[in-house]
Length: 147
Image (cartoon, rainbow, N blue to C red; front, side):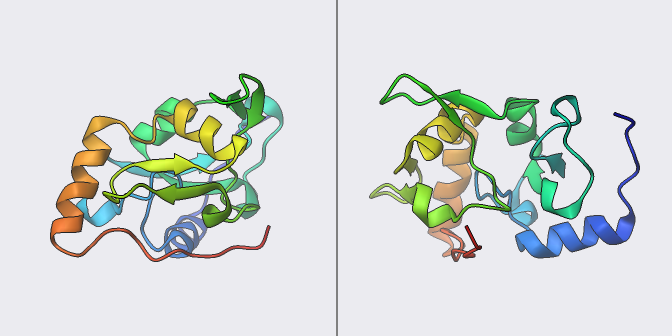
């Protein structure tokens, strides 16, 4: 599939839609030392498109760990599960915060596979969440989406 250019208007729409947060690890771009980019939920290599419903705002860490993955092993069932799709799934259905509000916990196979596959609880991300919590900037308000 030929790669196409994502317009500046589309990029701005995606950033606004995400409220400036990585749509996977939920870190805000305004406080992150990592770059953010537009990520293909279903990658080109798996016939994904540049349509807005296939694009997500992601920090570089999540984007790199996700790469071209669309599924990963669920640590509970030890079976393959699809990864969380921020365009089609509700975050609060698949994830919760732990007691400290710094660690994401998967409530479903999709949540658990996504946490493992994208390493959503990597140390720098947990440290950022802890710092944001100290200044009342974490956790982000849940943006409910249609599932």
